[in-house]
Length: 255
Ligand code: NAP
Image 1 (cartoon, protein in one colour):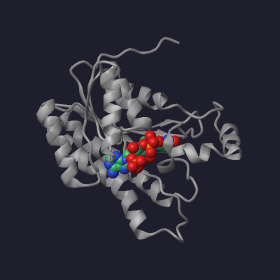
Image 2 (spheres, protein in one colour):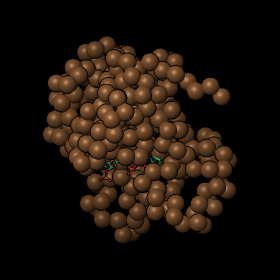
Image 3 (cartoon, helix red, strand yellow):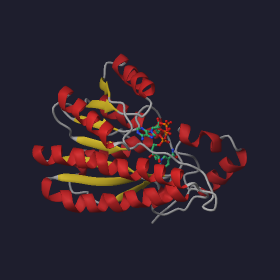
Image 4 (spheres, helix red, strand yellow):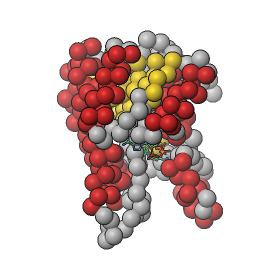
């Protein structure tokens, strides 16, 4: 199968939660096709390490650390991009957390923090990016949701599922409002992807066997298989595509 090729030279991309996992793969792959990428992460050392890894490969990358659930830190991230790049073409709202708890035992604090990071942060970044993209005459926003928010309840992840379902709804609303400004907005809903987030569950052989039997393609996904969908959605090849929540889950959910 030929690998698609893209030209993102001159394109400025911000990926939140890009210090590792899916976010890092997305930032790396946009940069490999010529983009200038800003890597945000709440762990500033992790953001710096990830950025240094890309710079070492000759890619155009900058660290933009900060907690994207905090409006002041979001403002700083966007000011940093304004200063360094002077524009923003693609925003990928990827930062996420996944607490595990029964509804009966869930603390309000953990519930609220999950909504803040997985949903409110996307609103805060979209508000900043939307103003810049509107002034520029267009842009692309990608929200990394989950099949948990659309098709597939998990177990003991009520705050996570609620936040991701909210993110899918927010995606459609933003797509509707921003279409007039030439800004396309889509959600990406991964299934089980091999990242630090799923590390503990992947160490359980019974869980692995269950996943393999439930996933028609018979395996877990790789971060670059999520970034491949993002590269396509942000490209002109997807110029008529907006307001959709795309599954990338090996066929587990065929809704
Ligand atoms: P990951 O390996 O845990 O990486 C996420 C990164 O985001 C971590 O470095 C994390 O730091 C950071 N982060 C957390 N809160 C943040 C905040 N407030 N501001 C900035 N950065 C923050 O996760 P992943 O598996 O790559 O997942 C990336 C996205 O895909 C998430 O939204 C997740 O819900 C979604 N997703 C993942 C899967 C999967 O199977 N992996 C499936 C469906 C959807 P900390 O370590 O300090 O939290």
